[in-house]
Length: 117
Image (cartoon, rainbow, N blue to C red; front, side, top):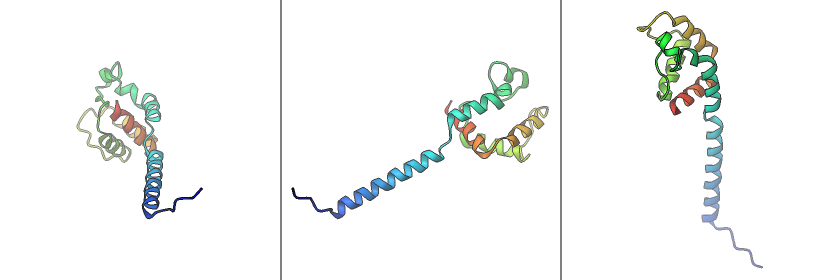
């Protein structure tokens, strides 16, 4: 049985495939975890931002279907106390404390969950 020679075309194909698979693996590893975001949202955010009770009592904004980058920027702004508090100031400190308690990964996960909902 005669083996076929390895051509330049085959080498390029295999190299491209390897790079694609490696890039996909790295991308998936860095992707936000929406399930973790869901759990964090329910644990830390839903009391004030849920549509059932929290929003009616606190007047908090609806967060679902909100742009991921916007949520991330707002939470990081609260964590650094750089947010414009033109709305209800009554809950300002609660938002600052909550945002400060979240890691960058937590914020990323919550934002991914809310933007996908």
